[in-house]
Image (cartoon, rainbow, N blue to C red; front, side, top):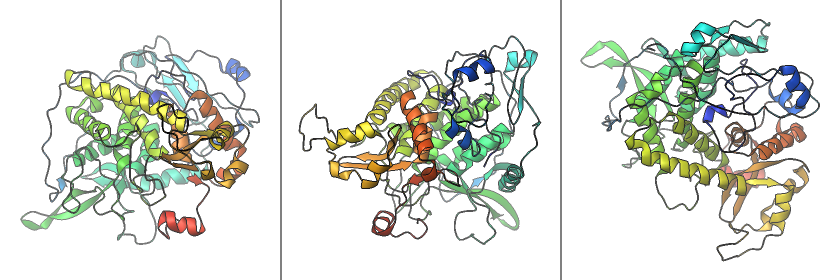
Length: 526
C-alpha cells in the first residue's frame, strides 16, 4: 500500500560501502538543483510504475552509536513464565553527531510519464534553513533546532489524499495491538472470519517491518520503540522443541498479547506476552529472518527518529551481539552464505528454498551493515567486528559472482565443463547445463539480468524472487551495474512480474507435479 513513502531507496540505511550504490542519497547536503538533475538523468518508466505501490524513505540513514559499557550477559527466563508488563516510554531524543557520507542518484530510463522529486535526508551540521518538497509531504529543517539536535519537523500533507491510501491508514490503525495500554505492534492479518485457531492474530516481526516504516514516516515513533524493546525481552526466553533448544540469540517469529488470571486472585487479570519461536508454528519452522529484520528496523528507528538512546542501551547492544554470534558461528558450510531450512522466511511454508536462499542472504548482508554501524566501539566487540567485516567481503563477492545470471552468463553455463576437480575450476559448483529450464532461455531479455533464488552444489534455482533482488539493490549487495540490470529486467517483463497487481513474490509459479514435490502438496501454497 502506498503510505506516502519516498520513492528514493537508500544505501544510507546500511552504512558506507566500498562500491558505488545504486539508489543512494547520502550526501550531507542537498546541493544539486532538481532542474539540472532532471536534465542529466533519464526518467525510469519502471520506477514510475513501481512507486505507486511502495518505497523507502531516504531519511533512514546511519549514525555511529556512542560507546557504552559491555554487558556480561542475561539470565534466561523460564519458558513456562509469561513476560509481565514492564512498559517503558521514550525519554526524549538526544542530539545526533555529524558524519560524512556520499552517494549517487538513481539513474533512470526513458518513458517516464511523471517526474519525481528527491526528499531531503536528515542532514547533519546544518548551517542554513533548507526546505525540500515531496509529493506527499514537506520536510522543514529548522536552523536553530536541527543544527543542535538533528530534529526534523514534518508538515502535514498538502495534497489531497487518495481514498485507497486513507483506507490503508485506517486499516493499519485498526490492526494495532496494545500491551498494558501502549502500542506494541500490528497483527499479521485483520480478517472478518474467526482465525483464532491459527496465528494470524499475532504480531509477527517480519510483518511489522513495513508497518513500522509507515509509522516512522508518520512520526509515530513510540509503537516502533515499544516493539523493538519488547521483542528484545522475548529473545532471552528458554526455547525448547522436543527436548532440544536452539542457540541463544534467536528472535521469536511472533508473539501474542494474552490476558491471564493474576496469581492468587482469580478475580483479577493481567496482560502477558506469549512468544512463538517455532515450537507452535505450522510445520515447526525456525524464524531465521526475524533477528535480521529486527536489526534493520532498529537502525531505521534510530535514523528516522534521531533517538539513538535505544541502540546504545546495554540490553540492546547485547541483543545485537547475540544475533550476530548466532549467525556468524562456525559450522560445516563452506560458503559465506547462511544455510537455512525451507520455510525459514517469507511465508513459513515450503517453497523449495532450503539451502542458501537469496532473500536470507540479502537480509543477512543488510543486518551486518546495520549492526556494524550500531555496535559500540569497545574491547569486547573487536573480534566480533573483525568477523563481521570479513563476512561482508566474502558474502558480497559470493552473491555478485555466483548468483548473477543474464544472457552472457547463460551462454557461459551452456559451455560449462562438468566433473572438474581442481582449485581453479570454472564450474565450481558442478552445474550441469541441462539444469537451465526451457522457459528461462525464451524469457531472459537481451538487456537485463537478476540474482537467482538459490545456489547449492550441483543446483541453481533460476526462479526470480522479488524481495531478494530488490533488497539487494536497497542494501547495495548488488553492484551498480547489476542493480540497473535488475530494474531493466523488471521493466522488460512487467506483464509477467507485475501486470495488474503488485510485484509477484516469485516467478514463475509452480504447478502440477513440480508443485506437489516442492511444496509437499500444500493447498495453501498454490
